[in-house]
Image (cartoon, rainbow, N blue to C red):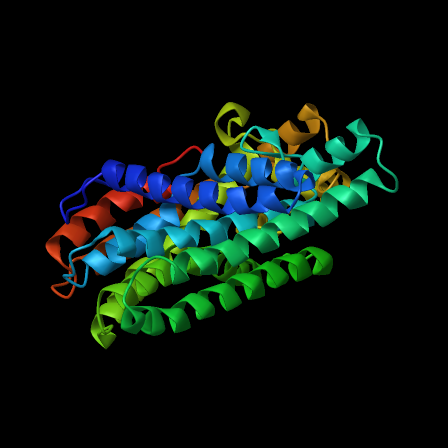
Length: 358
């Protein structure tokens, strides 16, 4: 598909999917030459990457470069598309850390390889085999992300300019993932701490840093443009994660691909739950202590916790916070530093990031 600055978001997503499809096909061809044992790895990576995905991070990166006034091209789109592979790594590892059984309506990677171990009658622990496989597949996706960037065909000057932002984004992502793990172990009930996790685990690497990465691909990165991208990306990134928090408790399983109330079973220390903890009575606190984090939580238990969250006004409060953060992001777009076409795309991306059911 021919690219132009006026390409619609739908057309850009198709082009990103094409670039990812071609890349993974080439890399899987090499994997399969190593030995037939790698066939399940190649198949799993291809399915995980191509079966679904909103491509939010590559889209923001490409819009970020358009915002500099640079006309996009295929090498730049390939470079932006590499960010989807960073996201694949994060999802695979996240499912291991959360002990999630499903992802996008299918078995999570560690569960799929656990099932393969059992089906083939292999030796040792099927559970450990699944976990080990998912860690390695996630690591491979992260390596592929760098490979796709380096082999995208962008000029060496552009590549050198973009790598510091790319590296910083990955450092922040891993820091955020650790903060999430630590908050779970700490059993935190702090809204402030949960917001920090939301910012680093998802917000920054989903929106702000992809925009910065795109700016690095497109130009010498003016200080003012980078600042405007932060004013847009940070609040919208936090709102994006807060929407995830809501969907993790109230999302429709047919849309999310995960069981209803999955975050409640996992005992996720989200902003939604921290807000709820602050607003509960003693009897409600006792009920939360009884049910929250129970991996075998029944649908009735999910409903009881949902009622507490709604009854304390925590859900309404979070929706108000999401609206406020979204408004901040929309205000930041109206700046002459950002090209007109990028402003249009960034406004549309607000709906994709916030008004979603998955």
